[in-house]
Length: 65
Image (cartoon, rainbow, N blue to C red):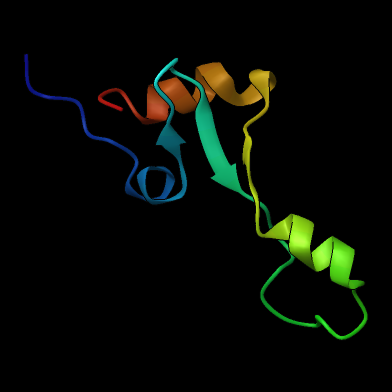
């Protein structure tokens, strides 16, 4: 059977931790920053663990991650 292909868009946006959780970056941090508070902008910089609801779908998109 041939190799499966990773979804390249997802592969660029997600990383896997040592325990197998998927890490992503938050949205809404690229423009219109004047109206957002410094605290909000600071928190947007941090990476977060993706939702458990998305986990199975992402695993299918990223079979080798």
